Length: 171
Image (cartoon, rainbow, N blue to C red; front, side, top):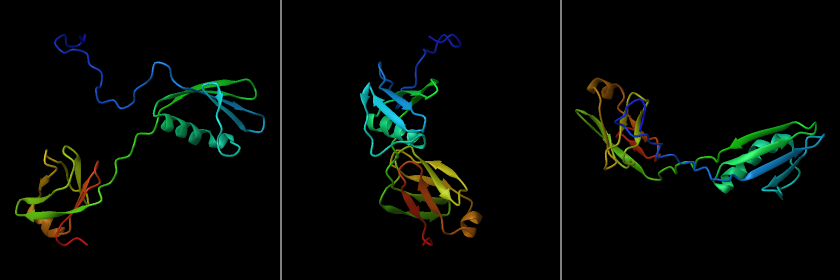
């Protein structure tokens, strides 16, 4: 129950994609005087291709977190005895762009095109408007006829799916 609104129950974001395990994998990094790294994952030596330097640390940690698909705890032990602790989240997977290109239809009321993911944001390029696709994956935009007369070549771009819809005059 929320203290602000007693009628509304407290809820965490159900759509959160990062799940934190009870015990996070531990990556321990020892940095020597020359800046070379010795890496251990859960107290086991982690072998990487070639000798690792301080400049390789961020990409290595990103790679480990992404490979494990979980957040990791990182402890960096410097040669002077300083210890730094941080957490690294795995990269979110990128949406695959759609291979097919659709066609946009112009009418007296605007432009519409299909092939989009339901609920995704669809952009009109040059971006003069944004529209949310309906449950069928169709975006219908009401644009002024004067705008369509000035810009007969219009491209609709799906922000999530990468789907494209080209108007009649588009190349």
